[in-house]
Length: 90
Image (cartoon, rainbow, N blue to C red; front, side):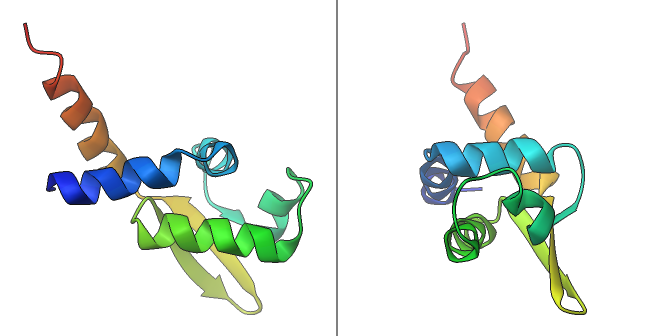
């Protein structure tokens, strides 16, 4: 992963609501309705944040019937962790 892609991920994670979404998804796949129960904003705001996270490849989205389900892209998160670790060389 190149630095430009990594910077897009950091930008996506720079929002407190998106960080909370990632934290919730660390517990496993969740539908948008379950995620929305954890916030004090409207569905349209959640959709905005989810689109941002999907486009930055932090999470996956899949539809099942009328519901959207989201899960973490752990491979990309591990790349970010490894990149940060590489900055801490002695």
